[in-house]
Amino acid sequence: MANTPSLPVSLLIASKSQSVGSEPQKKTREDWRKAKELEEARKAGTAPAAVDEEGKDINPHIPQYISSAPWYYNTVGPTLKHQRPQEDDKQKQLAKVGDWFQRGVNLDSLTTKFRKGACENCGAVTHKKKDCMERPRKVLAKFSGAEIAPDEFIQPDLKLDFDGKRDRWNGYNPTEHLGIIEEFEKVEDTKRQLKAQRLNTGDEDEGGEEEMDGDEDKYVDEVDMPGTKVDSKQRITVRNLRIREDTAKYLRNLDPNSAYYDPKTRSMRENPYKDTGKEAEQVDYAGENFIRFSGDTSKHAQAQLFAWEAQHAGVDVHLLAEPTKAEKLKVEYVGKKEEIKSSIQESILERYGGKEHLQVPPKALLLAQTEQYVEYSRAGKIIKGAEKPVVSSRYEEDVYINNHQSVWGSYWKDGQWGFQCCYSMIKNSYCTGERSKDIEEEKIPSSTVAINANKIVTQDSDDGNTDSHDDSQEEKFEEKQLPPPEVVKDTKDYEKSEARRKKKRDKKKKKKSHKKSIGKKGDTHESSDSESDEEAEKKKKLLEALQAEEKRLRQVDRLMSLDERKRPYNSMVESKAPNEEELEAYYMKRKREEDPMAFF
Image (tube, rainbow, N blue to C red; front, side, top):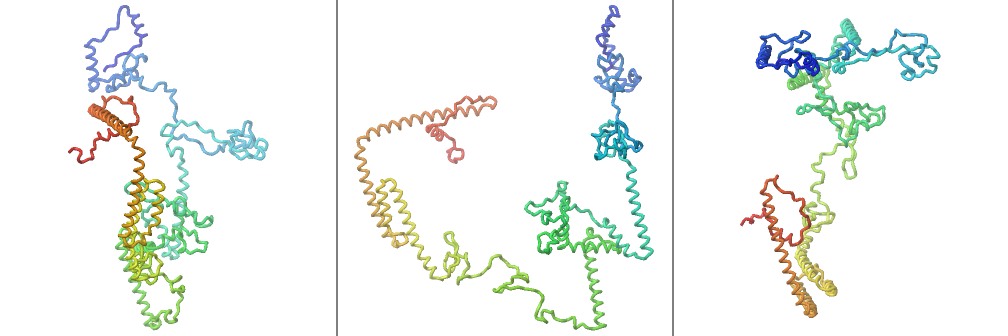
């Protein structure tokens, strides 16, 4: 839209007073249409853009809420002054790119006389005594006037922007790098001179070996740092931590002059027990180098060395890129080397003789003795010296002790282990053969009799709990007179005697119950009436509880059918423990969904 002039109220009043009787006229529809067409022409580029008071073009695509100025700016024509920063003189001046703090001290301000207002300790004018960073002198510079320190630079107050505060190279002096370049050039010149001297003296082989040592980086492939593991899935580096139960390497030898422990890589290359008199094979940890050069590690190192030597000799081979080719070349090289060695040995033997002296039996057979020390026990077992044969199991197998014909654990009964040959359950017992088997088989029926006797006794004890204390004492006395179950051999006699005792006990019980019934005849009618009333009252309460439970279930079904937002609150319902009748009614009316016969 076209920019409409927005005048403040004071200007409107002043203009109204100046124009007698003339009021500001409103834009007609035709004026609005012309303004609209002019705006569209400016956007299309057919009409020239609007110009502000400074003669700058105004972009016609700027929206109206940006281009229209507030009323208090007193603008008459189109302008963008209200969108630009005001009062440029008050804008803070940022530091330039080359501005930075000055380092060191000002050597131009050297003086030999103490100046008034300077530091009393060192004599510099740029700070006071309490801010002095120099060590307190025995005789202050104020009194001695000697060794006056130079003044520091007065540092500028730098006002940096966002990027200037985060510039790592801000204030870096490029001339500092010239020292590194000069040092590197000196090293290169020294190498060239040494190489020229070797060529003049003819020591080309030694120079080649040293070159190989100097160019080790060429053959070292990218490896992970010790103590780290790169996870290709997660794209992160994980440090292998020590297992907490293991002893830390730096605690194995607390002597400060022992093996060095590198805390960054968590490695200890030397043997920490080197000066303790222990061999490397006797200790559980002998340093990183001992572990590294044991097993197939030495073979891999030899293969890598062979590949480097072959590449230096002109053979195109790489251990990691072509491991099969490198291994095959190494096998051929070792085979040819052994053939040459054996051919030289044969030629020497053919020329000078003495082949028969090499084909002799070992010294252990010739002298009937050897330097290999072996120590035996009285039983003939090896204690020290030769290696023990590998045992297939940690337990001795097929060892029969105490004349047994089977091993311990070959027989099992009633939760106990024993020997199959004699059914003995004692581990260190002597075998008695088939006789002990027969005795064990005879014990089986007697044990069944004992079990039956125990059952009968327990039943009688349960019945006797209802009798008085005197009857229980008599029964205990009779039970004490019973023969033990182990002695009873005939089950029929035992059962007959038990039947007689049971009859006696029944007679005593009948007599007691008869005496009690005579004393309680008068009270039977009253008790029967009270019992019938209690039963009727219980039935009535149960009926009421059933009706209340049915009413509650109907209420639950009605609430469940309603929408959740329309259900009433039940916070005012009194909560109390249910009585016996309510619990019985709940169990009778409860739906059992898990019962398969609930719907039949």
